[in-house]
Image 1 (tube, chains in turn cyan, yellow):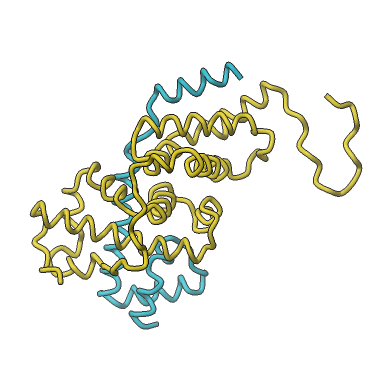
Image 2 (cartoon, helix red, strand yellow):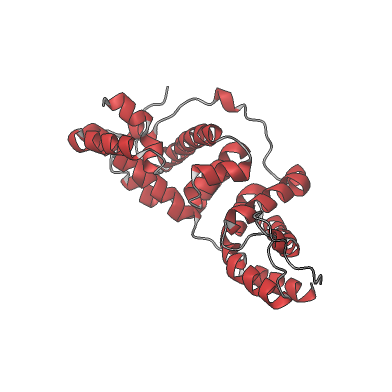
Amino acid sequence: MRCRECVEHLYEYLDREVTPDLEAEIRAHIQKCPPCSEHFDFETLFLKFVRVRCRAQGAPATLRRRILEQLLEE
Amino acid sequence: MSSTPPPASSNPPSPPARSPEERREGYEKEALVHLDVLYRVALRLTGNAADAEDLVQETMLRAYRSWDRYTPGTNAKGWLLTILRHLFINEYRRKSRHPETVDVDTIEPFALFQEVQEEDPQGAFFDKIVDDEVLRAVDQLPEAFREAVTLSDVEGLSYEEVAKVLEVPVGTVKSRLYRGRRLLQAKLYDYAVGMGYIKGQSKK
């Protein structure tokens, strides 16, 4: 596998959406290619960053109460 | 209540009628647990807390009323998100504060890694960006990208699940995610450079 092909599948690989065969090929390439490895680590960090930062907020307690009260009236 | 015995056919039987208690218990166990997810998605769609709360409340009410159509143990999160999205499109989108003006095909590809590779390949500058800025950057994405990024990157739905909620093919989900992420990276890069967190290269 070449770097270009590897990077083309970058997100599908990180999203765990590739076939086991392709996953093995990509993993093998990353292990022996420092630039690709650095690139994949960076994108992994980016995706984790987005997830953690955007999930900090949850539903307000007042909303939960409103919904439960609404159910009692049903 | 009907006293007719279930038909002895090999067709999947319609679910047995649930008692109101069972109904409510099932709903609390399978639907209410997704309240945080629904609220976050609603916030990203409507762009404001008041509408997001109303949208979620209405979604939960509709879900409760049609709870008998939901098969227990299947994908409640996806089912609820589909209800929420339909409601949003039909009743909230008009007044949402996100105008749809960006031509998504003209978006220039931007790869953050290539920009910061020399200076900060470990992405240390991410730590300096506060949550609100990340949310603001997501909110600035065109709706089609914002939905895909929120469902996949924030809430962890698979491509297949995102495709189902958005009612588009999996290939479309992939391309929206790709472009949405690149656009998000471009916005975060501009912000980080503007704040002096990274020097950045002179763009263009």
